Image 1 (cartoon, rainbow, N blue to C red):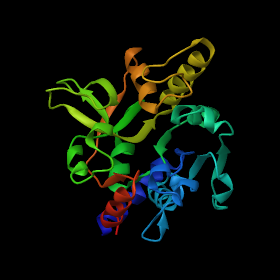
Image 2 (cartoon, rainbow, N blue to C red; image 1 turned 90 degrees about the horizontal axis):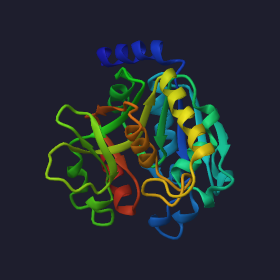
Image 3 (cartoon, rainbow, N blue to C red; image 1 turned 120 degrees about the horizontal axis):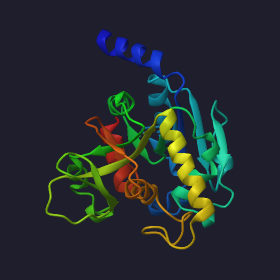
Amino acid sequence: MNQLKSRHVLWNRYTTKMKAIIIAAGTGIRLGKEKSKLPKALLEVNDQTVLSRQISVLKKMGVNEIVVITGPYAEKFPSIDVTYVNDQNHDEHDILGSLIVAKDYIDGETIITYSDILFDVITLEQIIQQECDIGIAIDMDWKKAYEGRTFHPLTEAENILLSDDKNILKIQKNIKSQEENIGEFLGLIKLSSHGSKIFTDKFEYLLTNHIGTFHNAASLKKAYITDFIQELVDSKIFVTPILVSGKWCEIDTNQDLERAEKIFS
């Protein structure tokens, strides 16, 4: 207990300038009619919202400046000590488009996270501890999470194919390969100050120069984060794979919600 406490004190000392951006513009469409009008960040897991759980873990690691990107039903978010940025054109965007709305907040050391995932302190610590400009969290033991997950099958996983020397080759849904070097993207990104500049410079370049389809998406603003990461990789910008081993889970269906309540009981 004392060792764990001292470890958190140590990281609090070094990460007080780090911020987090939570992309929370999505709703629980696959969770039934009632939850479809609720941002997924506000789903409750054992009487505590996903958002409050994420904020709690972030603050334990000294990440106190938090930006939350909202979409529809923004008025349902609680009045707490975070900065809310509303994606007023959320109907025209997917997750990358929502993140672009808050691009001015991407500076300095930054954690970017999906709003429909839960993760523990160990997972976040492994991410923060990794020295890199741009790093993405990867679970190499990902297939276990899909056992019995009938409403969110294996084919919907955001996969990452690594080379033998653990460099990222490809990131997209349902990578089919005989290779063993395939993991799942958690939806967590770490940026150094320089990495934030690389990130935003690429945004600005694409917004000015790109027209038409973007990787697997109909347009840049309809793209996923994974499409943008693939763009970085294709542009020879090094993206560090951060292999994590802590607890985490995604919440996309009621089945996932039940699983989350068991993992984070």
